[in-house]
Image (cartoon, rainbow, N blue to C red; front, side):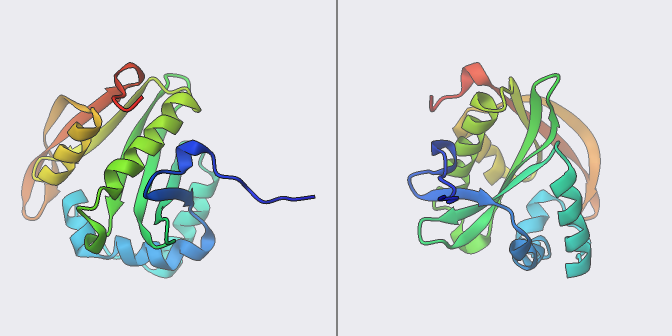
Length: 182
């Protein structure tokens, strides 16, 4: 019997695939999490150890409100991660996030990964609304989410303390009916 897993179209893009976040990715993802170039636009976090990363990984594997995928080029270079979290199955909404490591930014990977995950979230998970929380100074993220069809929904004033000051968090959202690539 052949047990090979065939990717579905919503996990295969033109330039990349979204693959399962596996245990062997923990060290790589820990390096990304500890990279200030990646984390400053998302709010600097305290560095994490590989042990802490392992505990986090085991926790998210059991949490049905979180889904994390590695962004992998067709050459199998791992370039970032895209996630659904705070998935609310009853009310059919979820938060989404994406990051691409600096040397691969500006190549369209984040946009393609978002489009693939949105397709999955809307048409397989049957979600109605997806939203993103974006720090006010993260202009590239704002442009990225707007390019996929997200619209500014609200502003949470001065709720995050980052880099020595309080900043606003913008909430951007998209509804299934507004998905512009379908």
